[in-house]
Length: 114
Image (tube, rainbow, N blue to C red; front, side, top):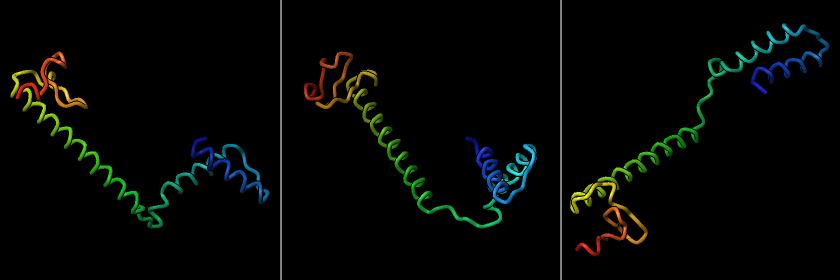
C-alpha cells in the first residue's frame, strides 16, 4: 500500500460516514491534496526533531569514525611490520595466536624473529 492508497482509503471512509459520494477521479484528487498537506505539515506547525534521533545519528557517526580510526591504525601497524621484515603488507597476518609474516602463515612469527 502506498501513501496515496492510504489517504484514498481514509478519505473514502470519511466521505461514506457522512453520506457523500464522489467519482473515482474526485476521490483521487482529494486524497492527493491531503497527502500533500500531510507531507508539508511541518511548515504549518513547528515539529522539532526528536532529540533521540539526533543523538542516535551522532553516536552512529562517532562509532563509524572510531571504526575507521582503528582500521587505519591496524593498517599503519601492518605497514610498519611489513617494512621491518621486508615483505609486502599483504603478507602480514593477524591471528588469534599473534602476528605472522610471510605467504606461508607458519613461515615466520614475530616471536621467532626477535
